[in-house]
Length: 454
Ligand SMILES: Cc1cc2nc3c(=O)[nH]c(=O)nc-3n(C[C@H](O)[C@H](O)[C@H](O)COP(=O)(O)OP(=O)(O)OC[C@H]3O[C@@H](n4cnc5c(N)ncnc54)[C@H](O)[C@@H]3O)c2cc1C
Image (tube, rainbow, N blue to C red; front, side):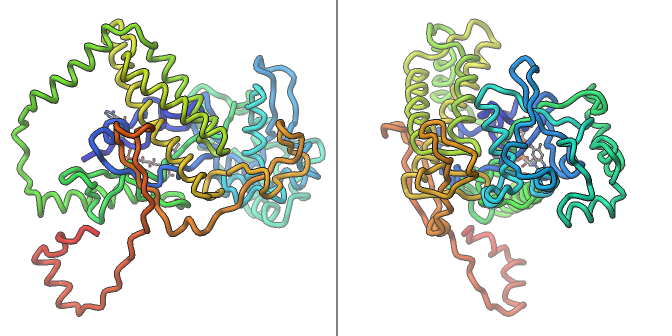
């Protein structure tokens, strides 16, 4: 049963707990088919202490500003794009319960325009901060916000003068958790970025969470069951449901006896040989490789995609993986070996995830869920937000709804030029069954329900 969670370490900006390497490289190598790898959830999070700044963190309407790399030259960069303090404050408030980046909330100065602008600012080499000591601008007033935030804050009694007072009033635990990590929101801003927070795709499973490799089950975030627009809270439920169903199937069909733990000497030999190759290698240093993968993934497969950038990134990822297969990674000691194994696995996972993005975009896929596909012929994001290459307003491609009836399924294949075989399959139909209670109950009691995993 594979339950390694999402591969949070694939990204430079990530709100996963550190050390979430995942088991994706190993699962690809073992022949497991993956589905919907394009689908993630991205959102604003603090990056020192990793924590989503969703809900009350944004409903308290903090100031969002940027600085240079040294923390100087503070600028209220959002004000240039929002026509008034009221519109900026309202969008900031909505970022609370419209938390993950949502491409449908970008235009018209929607709340997800903030994610686009934060990302843009960071791409310029600047750092972005949330500051609870000050309002977003001098003209800010709760009374001047749009009707929904105004009423919400009034009803919550959160009409205090500063964001920290409003936050403390509505949700003191939100302030406390930063204090527990030695961050005092009363006296310092927190650095934020648009971070990877959940992988909605993953490995293909049937209704008993069994993968295409018989006897291997995938549960939790690693299973590709979460859909394009996973509702908040659904991941933990999905993990429990999948775990329970896999356990029932295993107990009822596979038998509950633990295996005798036979050792496949050929496989062990291959593993030891692979480690030895890293020990003797003059190749790349694993830490550098991991940094390189993260930077590439955040740039090309984060919440903003562009076909040309993703294609280039995929080419680089393939070259990197080939060089690791050919030359190994430099591992001076035991720790170096662990890093080398992680880097090798992550490199293969990176190829898989980038291949999915390129395949989807080449098939005509547009923006959906938590990512935006940039396209010169698409919808204008904001008249003042220009594409640096053309000097014209940046545009994105709308969702291609035809893709709703297709699932991208991929399998590792060392013989193909880019290591993955792809096919488009149709979503499984949910069968309509009109059976009498007695029949259905008998099937359940006699264990017949375990025969059809589809
Ligand atoms: C900041 C944040 C907030 C979230 N909030 C919510 C929420 O409010 N509601 C909700 O439903 N979901 C939420 N999620 C998503 C949810 O937490 C995850 O989807 C869920 O925890 C995944 O459970 P899991 O058991 O699949 O994996 P995990 O809980 O990630 O566990 C996987 C385990 O496997 C270990 N592991 C990984 N790789 C290896 C390896 N190679 N070898 C050995 N061990 C390994 C990891 O260290 C970890 O202990 C949130 C996620 C984040 C990051």
